[in-house]
Image (tube, rainbow, N blue to C red):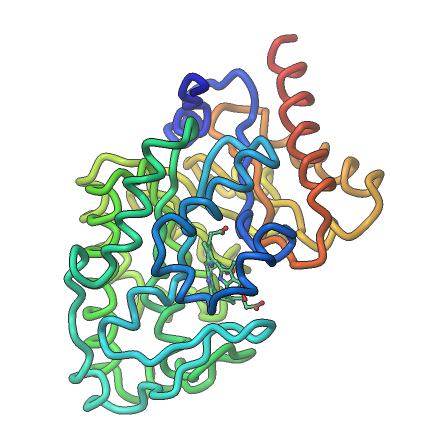
Length: 346
Ligand SMILES: Cc1c2[nH]c(c1CCC(=O)O)Cc1[nH]c(c(CCC(=O)O)c1C)Cc1[nH]c(c(CCC(=O)O)c1C)Cc1[nH]c(c(C)c1CCC(=O)O)C2
């Protein structure tokens, strides 16, 4: 086996690195012919129930693209099935829930997870991967707001209107829901670290839809609890969301190690705002469908900002689309490694 590559972990901690580490959100997915072939045989959650398949799909992009970290194959919806949410992943749609949360009674009925019993296949996949990988393994979970948005709306949403109206119309029920999801997230992620996850990413993909005041009142308290509990595990913590430029000052106060940015906020802008954490991101994934010249030009701009100081990880601003070519990502990974190596040696 290759020697262990810890460049990603060092960048998470804000240390100097020999080159900028790279990984991609949704690096295991439908853009890979091998993934599509496996997925033909199973539903999404059937795949998640077989540790060997999860491990294989997790390893695939590491071997194929040469990235510096692996992210566990699972979904943010995975633990919800075990607290009473009836969820299915519909291809081309996303998570769909047949028993959405609409009242205090629905929230009261939600249970707790017992990780070693309920998500043992996910934990088993982590244990397998730790024997197989020579790059760090990132564990992950959805954050309470983002999970609640699916649970309340019943599926993907544009405006999150029912979610935000519950937050304001029935703050007590909202708080209870946040507490239950917060506990689930803590239990789930602690179990992932105990099984061998070497970093954690909390996906709050849709939280950018609330303003800073509502974030402080209705979401920040549970995030403070989650992050301070997870900090105790000792592994680096990444917090990511889409369109969160207006929330970054609040995020910077949380004891997370890394902030994941989408393409709307540049690395320079975030640093000029006073963000002191390691930054991760943030090529617009749409560019992966453009010419190589456009990809290179935009990537170079991001890297020139990123490498101004230690504590930078290259990624996309959101996940890879299914119609991206594997070769594009291979070329991009090699480009980031080479370009940043030359720059730091100088
Ligand atoms: C919001 C969210 C979800 N899931 C996730 C998020 C947060 C990141 C983000 O903002 O995108 C996170 C996620 N989902 C998946 C991973 C695995 C690891 C990885 O990034 O490679 C991760 C980290 C697998 C997956 N999760 C899903 C797929 C595709 C499913 C398939 O094979 O049909 C994969 C590989 C399904 C899924 N699950 C979800 C969506 C929106 C979709 C896509 C729907 C579609 O376009 O078909 C919910």
